[in-house]
Length: 99
Length: 490
Image (cartoon, rainbow over all chains, first blue to last red; front, side, top):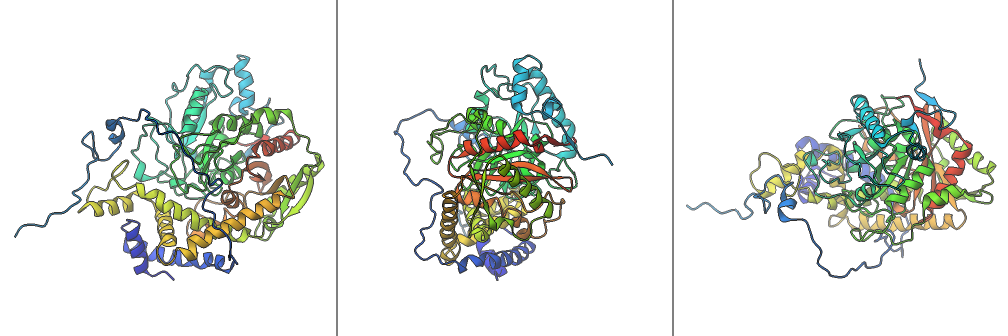
């Protein structure tokens, strides 16, 4: 069983603000999903290597050569808020109000 | 009541919009039809049917795409693209509100390859949001309807691409397949759909869902068109370090040469023919097995004992990867940002809450849980180990068989709304397709008849990089059968 409190904590890690209704719904749905998913715990997996790579695990390297890239103005053009060169975001460091 | 489908005796009888691309190629070359007429017809039919079917999220004007490319199979032949494949200057939403205003500044590698081959793009097709779903009901822009019966789903997540080919709106459409998202809608809409070997096709420019499982692949009318489609999209790409350097033969040349089916070993996994399969589906697949036997193939029994663990393993790994991949949608770099917020963190949280749909949020939560401290070993790591067992099952099976044959889905297309209430019921519809993604092997869905007037799909899987053999066997089957000549009456 995943409680609503746990859902709230997980949602915080995932940067999702959920409504009370969503929390209740996900708590019950994920509990039943995980109940079913728990059958993988029955498998004897001692000594089995996890699949960390889908197919090939070799490193892929290339020459470190400079190639033309997209312009800064082009890259930021699709952002919801921009000054033409950078992304605009709300203040990251909040200042305390002076007494 | 008139039939919901038309069965043609051969390709010659078919109207041009239903013909396979290889027939259209001959007509263009013989000047029986022009490239402009083809695109005009595809765009007109797409616009006319979109109110009913909702296959497309955007349809091109019609004039674009004529590059004057010569000596290319796809030159002038209209194609469609799933809306999670980025297209320079054409809105790409991945079926999500969070990307409703996103216009990419570059082309995915597969789009660049199609442009180089001269294929005009009809439009971008509807899909489950971020490819998360099995019915196209999770799109933020409305459900796509199955052209065989508009009260039923087309499957998903690449439902729009399946419908585009099934309804004669495009000769080839690209989709993406993370757990069956190409093969399942292909089966439910009566067309061919293929998930190539992991790495066969570059994922550069595919909006990521689960990076170790995602693969781009085509929808086509028949197996020969599939070979031509793979010819153009596959190959190593320096922009995708997981794309394979495995040599790519000409699949179309290989398929056209023909294949002697005598002695080809086709494995039938017992685990795929148990309870819960619709009778008509089991019967059509058994008839297909008999057909292959008649063609000289040797039918052998194979075991895939970890099949029953595939759904939990898949949904733990896929959601874990998705929770990480989707962290990039934060209201800063592209798309949607919430209108009101108190500070930066509040902006992230409100943007993601308002921008993502219910299924996407459900999967982000599940994936974050599976990766979180205290649960990582029990869920994510256990699932990765179980994935190894599933891979080993297939390697053992391919030591006994050249190809594996199974149903694609347990049942034909279900009703719209039938499975939306319970996520697990929806997830179970992927039971026969997800193992191929976990094992990274190629798998193909081709039509094999009807059950209750709705199409049934047959799945052929092969070992790594055996696409040529799979397509050749499928084409030999299609030369001797007429299931692929049966199309939805649109």
